[in-house]
Image (cartoon, rainbow, N blue to C red; front, side):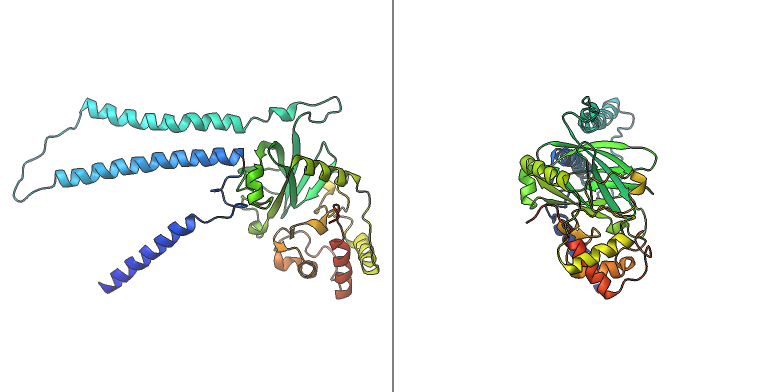
Length: 360
């Protein structure tokens, strides 16, 4: 008996903790704190379906308890209650009610499905072939990093997606190796990235909610893609329209990185010998998609994370350069060049940390 009581106490404790923790969530990551039109729509549909399910459970439970209490056998009474089998009235009631509940859920779901799938603005082009009134981003997923290309602006970034707030941003999604899935939990998604076709959708980033999240949201791969699937993260930086326009000008004006200091210049020489074949250091790199085998490093010094998951610091960068396999198993950078000496790693670190577009 004591053992049973202990088990029930543990069950009650874990259930309570699960209920409490279910309400926890950061504004930059939680789907329960929607930060855009798409996320808000999906959240409302989730709440609607939850309310319907809870109401059904309550009604069924009440009827179940009533029947058990009302028609329980009392003493030696062996009489059989009145049977309602074959009642047309009851058959109609418990057939119509589920249909009505399904309609309540199906109508807004179908309506929002078509609304969220509407990417018609992407098709409106000007005489130069550029999208007229919409910001388009080409997302390419790779093992295990993300590339973001702004085709109408001539800009390519990696790992950090930069977007304006309070307007729709349209995405073309593809993958270069295996199936991945693009997901920004607090803003909406998810959508698969495939190697054989392009998926399209849009997101909108609310400025007020973005401020609450310090203008930084977390994105993830939501499709099991390999040993480092859980580490395939990216960051989304949100800006006002004016700030975004200034960022675009800064990125478009970059030609070649300016290197300051002897150590950084030494690192540039090492980079040009070992890394330039895969990595670009200008945000307007014009190489074809097949030749972009590794993240664009033009603004590496301004990123939020190293390799998408490590805190952005010189110490962590040195750890990554020394042994990338340790921090992201299965990544394509592992063993692509010989072992670097500590001096070479220090030089590369100085060079990479100096790759900045917007001077602060």
